[in-house]
Amino acid sequence: MSRRVVRQSKFRHVFGQAAKADQSYEDIRVSKVTWDSSFCAVNPKFLAIIVEAGGGGAFIVLPLAKTGRVDKNYPLVTGHTAPVLDIDWCPHNDNVIASASDDTTIMVWQIPDYTPVRNITEPVITLEGHSKRVGILSWHPTARNVLLSAGGDNVIIIWNVGTGEVLLSLDDLHPDVIHSVCWNSNGSLIATTCKDKTLRIIDPRKGQVVANNFEEPVALQEMDTSNGVLLPFYDPDSSIVYLCGKGDSSIRYFEITEEAPYVHYLNTFSSKEPQRGVGFMPKRGLDVSKCEIARFYKLHERKCEPIIMTVPRKSDLFQDDLYPDTPGPEPALEADEWLAGQDAEPVLISLKDGYVPPKHRELRVTKRNILDVRPPAGPRRSQSASDAPLAQQHTLETILEEIKALRERVQAQEQRITALENMLCELVDGTD
Figure 1 (cartoon, rainbow, N blue to C red):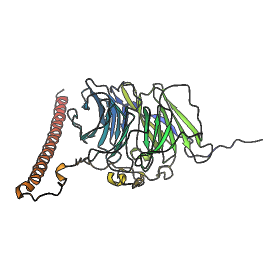
Figure 2 (figure 1 turned 180 degrees about the vertical axis):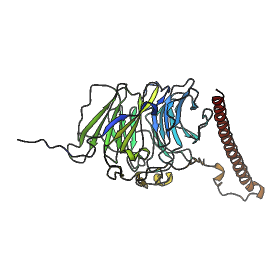
Figure 3 (figure 1 turned 60 degrees about the horizontal axis):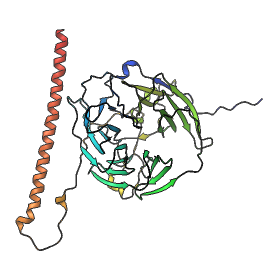
Figure 4 (figure 1 turned 90 degrees about the vertical axis):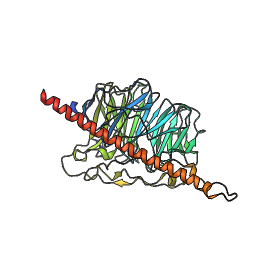
């Protein structure tokens, strides 16, 4: 008699489980915009969700620990004049997030560690370059302050957020709407899908398509008859790809191997309610003590529910085989180095003792100063004329310093007001 050989894999028994009710985020008016992004972004500190907003676009940012019912007056991040279509946390600074909007702009925001008392309305910088709505954002995985955006104008722009400049513009590679864009692990290539049903591998610094129209797939997996958009999330540490159907109520996951048949079905997490969108936690934000290998943040119509993927293990010791060193928050390159042609793999960290987020780091934007450009050689000028640009530069620096001091003072006052409000609430509760 022949016996079926069962493939050995440490991920064969991965199972998904919804968090308890008190660990969800309730009373959030999730955006109803018909767009194919995930509407949700998460990192080890914050959860961000695109929400319904009158008179423009907005999203809400919650500390991960702030579970339960969200106050209807909780401050939002507002500033766009049309609906927000995509948001993405910076992988190198957990307090920085970018948003893309139907108003054709991208805004980059600094989120404070404390809870603000009013809406955040001033972005660190606004990036303008697209002629139609911007629906896709993706930070470079290894270079500091490098952000990719794709718009309805079929153009991909790569920005240096630190200076507000366009590094590269890829405007003739896609004949139709771009559906999705992602970087490879070291940020040397990008992969795009387009409405023309073509997958392209692009070298952005050369502005060339280096591969597309692959003739035969290495594997073909029939899913279902649903026409909903599939949101794929790939974990390179475990070689597992998770497929979350928008409008679906399940998360399917597969293990990818280097040998045929390459794609191995593992399991499906199913629930009763369909998902409006899904956020995917970076590896450094997981609870390694519970053998958690993935965590999703599933958006319902009025709430966000964490879904935890776990490998069952009996031992309480750190499981080295489940948690290889993973990309940390330190960038490997500066924007100028990447643009000049350098590549570098992500700077890895160990999760053996868990991950502790670094202290608040401020994003500094240094715009090019036209006063720094030397004038062409000419007749010798008088001393007073040559000193004028220096005086102007000194005045500008003084004004910037005063603005910075004023911003810090306002933030300190907001913290004081928050503390006083909390004391007042405690006093009121005490009298009751």
